[in-house]
Image 1 (cartoon, one colour):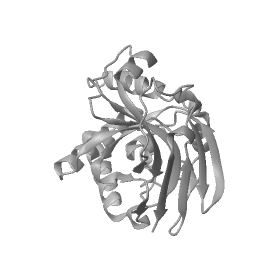
Image 2: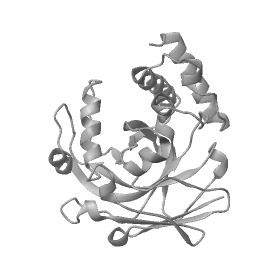
Image 3: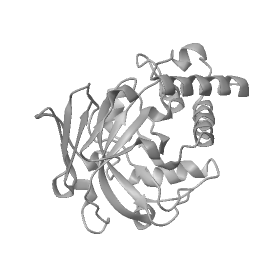
Image 4: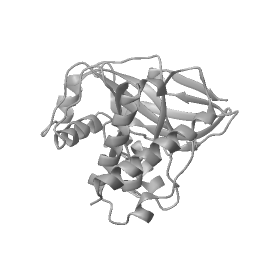
Length: 261
């Protein structure tokens, strides 16, 4: 495992890369003995530094929960990161590409909790009971670590490659819609690029919320009311660049549009 000094050094490198929108060499290339526990420790030091600097935590993201994303990254274990208030956009937003090192889009559902959710034996039914509503969301992926050859350790350390989130306008309680069958049709500049259905995330998108509550229990924490939980993509990531217009059609849950400027 890494020393506290190494963990602090890497967290500081990632904070600087976030500030400058740069990319650092792979952690696993420089610290081959680094573990998943080390990577969450790095993420935690980085997170605490951001909160100390005045950023406000609004939720959590879960990643690598679908076969599509696992095959796209070569990583088979889910991961999680944090989301701050200054990374949340509304549908229709212009998103500055200069805020990111690289930009990819994923199609997801987000959940807002009305009750706390705690492991260690949280089930899908427990998660559904704790969820206030679901809302469609696009995740903007952003890596501060070189992409080639990265492992789960690199990705977790880098806040699970989270960059930003675009939220839709339609909210549904879990008892109002069959969440497994929410579709996603992802367009770039008017051409369809990716399609998927929400059941691609662990057979039910809220299963990831239960997984996260159980994972948090291992660290002595729980999910809190009001938190936004981004549940994981059910399409492969789509690359975008400045000038691209993105639209995602979620069928009964409406559409999300944004433009990268």
